[in-house]
Length: 263
Image (tube, rainbow, N blue to C red):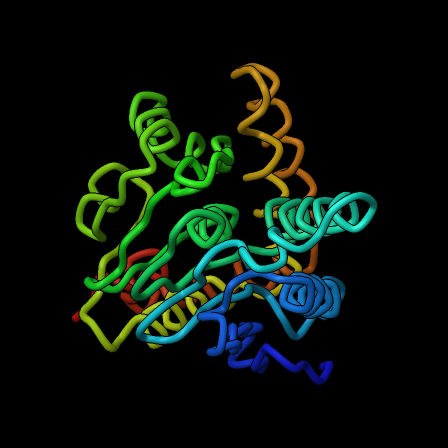
């Protein structure tokens, strides 16, 4: 685990936790924060002790978006390098080989919202707000990130207007999966990430690959691909062990498939 200037990182029950920690800029994404998030994620890519990743700010703000002072100052080759760095962050998160959860409280404007949308699942505090605010600065928002979570009409409305929406509306349209009470977003996001991580890195990595690839296939290709994945999984020792424990639980009257439904 690296030492970072603007991140607090840890591993908790199979979850790699990345907490943005640049309060002077409200976690705005400048040179350093881009590089540090990329480095933290790359450090866990092949780490079998990390099966899922949680990305979180604090209970007052998630990420203020682009570091506007950097955009104001850079030009020429430096601007190209900064753009390339942003592209590397986006693709690193978007295509990460393990499940990712964003826990968002407070403001998540523009590129801050985009960062959450690059993650697989977003949990939001009741005080969270989201908006594709880049249009206010004559920039474009990350349309594809919105489109994969909400319908085309809502994604285009957000892209064209930059108007913010609150957490409840974000949940209603699918931008957010769960809304939690103020003050609990880290705890709630971590709880979800732990549930995912219980499967272990071997399995979560395979499932993330399915989630990334199958959505871009036609229905016949996706069916064939997912059956090949199943055939691969059932030949692994992991399946043999899980099947034995699952059958034992069923015989004792405790279905593992329904265990989360129990009070």
